[in-house]
Structures are given as structure tokens and as C-alpha cells.
Amino acid sequence: MGTHIRAGELDIWAEQTGQGPDILLIGGLGDTVESWQFQLDGLSDRYHLIAFDNRGAGRTAMPATPVSVETMADDAAHLLRAVGVPSAHVAGFSGGSIIAQELALRHPELVRSLVLQSTWPVMDPYLRSWARFVRWLVEVAPSERAFLEGFFLDIYTARAHNDGTVDQLIEEVLAFPHKQAPEDVQRFLDSFIEHDTTERLPRISVPALVLAGGLDPTARPGLCRAVAEKIPHARFEIMEKEAHQPFQEIPNEWNSRVDAFWRAVEAGN
Image (cartoon, rainbow, N blue to C red; front, side):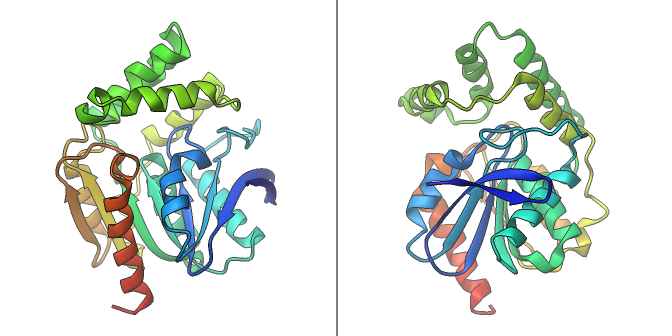
């Protein structure tokens, strides 16, 4: 069960489970603790996992103050300090991977390693246009279901759409009682559209694993590779048959990959 934790200026909704090396999980656009359920269930036998709702998502309020990637990275830092974690392995997907990059740059003492899924250093024109399309879709979709059906076309594989996985995810999102306001979705998107870590990524000195979905039409492998090439000694892997969120579609394989990486970091390899 989760709880609100006072972290900086926010009461951040967070869930902690398991024992072992500390892991911080950072979600993407509008995603909440529940987006990491397969990791909370599948890795808690060997790690202490912390997942949380970003500001403006789920059960964490969006303050009236301006939102930026930097402020969200600071939120994550405040949370780690509030729960008494001196340093954590940090994993983020999509927008959460950008927050994770910024956390490592702004608070390097808090980051033991990085796992960056479906990431980028700066949006290229294609990804920027897609983000603006999503911003528009939030405004014009006639229902929450219609928005999700359109948005998920670029998030999950055709396999997941055809085998009923996406239908199940949509039903779970529709049933979730803590809705994100459309304007908060747009503020979140706006914070990423012009954000750029390209020139600063070489300052990251912790071990990093960058994962790309070979079928991801948004954070395409080339964008992910650009991040790996900028971070010294980063590992880059493509999951050829996967899209934007393989940690949900094939959680056992994804968990196995990141577990092997974290074990190697812990062993000093």
C-alpha cells in the first residue's frame, strides 16, 4: 500500500516494497505507481523498490507553480531524502527517463546507476510533432476511452492490441479513480518538448543501461542510441520486437535484463 510522503513542497504519493539495494522507479506521461506493478511484484524479492506519482499525476497534486523537468527531478531527489535513501539505482521510462537523466545531473550523489527505457537527449522534429499531436488529442478526444485508444496506438505493439492486452489496460485506466486533469497532461508534455540534455549527458559518471524498443515509433532506437553514446561507458540494447513499454508487455524479460545490470553494478563489474 502507498502513502503520501512530504518531500520538499509536495505530498508525493509513493509505494515502497521489498528489501535489498534501493531502486527508484520514475514513470512517464501521467503514469502512476500502478504502471510499475510488474516490477513491484517481480523484483521485490531482491530489491527495495520505490515508485511514486509525479506531480500532477494520480495522487500527487500539481502545484500552481511552473512545472519543468528540473522541478520533477528535484521532486525525486526530495523523495529519496525523505525516505532516507542515500543513493539508489534509478530506472525511468519515456518522460520518466528524462527526469532520471536530470536527477543524475542535478543530484549525482543520489544516483547509483541509471536504466533509461525509451529515452532521448532532445526531441527531434518527428518526436516533437508527435508530442504536440498528443497535446491536441487531449483537447479534442470525445472521451477518455477515445483518447486512450488513439494514444496507445503508438505506445504498445500490434501484438498487444491484437491479443487483448491493450483492451485490459484501457479498462484499468478507466476504472482508476485518480484522474489526471487534461491541463496537467499538457503542462507535463510542454516541459519535455524543448528540454535538452545533449551537451550535459557526458557529465553522467554512473553505470547506465539504455533500452530501446525496436518497434517504438516515438522514442525510436536512434534517439535512445544517441543517449547511450553521450553517457560514458553506457550499455545500449534494442529489444527488437518491442515498442515503447516492454516492461509491461514482456515484464519477465525486462526484469531479467535490469536485474542482471543491477547485480553487475552491485558487484562492481
